[in-house]
Length: 266
Image 1 (tube, rainbow, N blue to C red):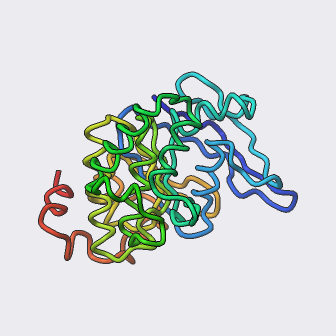
Image 2 (cartoon, rainbow, N blue to C red):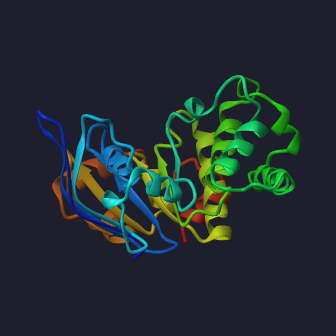
């Protein structure tokens, strides 16, 4: 297992946001964490990267490549986060400073993680943009000059720039229209295949889960209520809450582009 979460509890002074959650992600797999807003899935993902708000406290154990992440210092964690574990956030637009070009963002990201050669950084920036279907001229543009879909592609390029072993994608299609969302996930699946990274995919959209996931875990009110292989969860859910979520979802597979339908039938 590349990541193991054991009996994780996240608390404030008033209540528990995550309650004794355990999960494990294998190398190279696409693991979907599903639940409605407020179920605790995003807070759990923040705990993995030591990015919890100051008023939150995590108890339990999070092991990544044999390291207990909760026991690492802030300095030690910075070497893991970004290099070994990368994030793509729902609010991807908030990840960009409006007065810096895309190229400057990618360059600073590399410098922050020890890539000192200017020549190497320029080459990797060009390669990263090309890998997500963007022309290298995008490097000279500012975030406000790009569409939402283009900015999301840049977010993917940045997250995979240093070839992380685990990518955490938190509701990355929520702010996109349906077609753009499908294309972004198709691109992410392609890049995962090329890099071999594992993905923790946080979502509430069962159509994306059907198409992309290898295994699924379902959260409700901070608790893990069900987990298992994709087909077992989708075709034979055991918990009544999981059944309700699946029954309430749009018809799975309807209206997807042909390439995405084929991916969903793997």
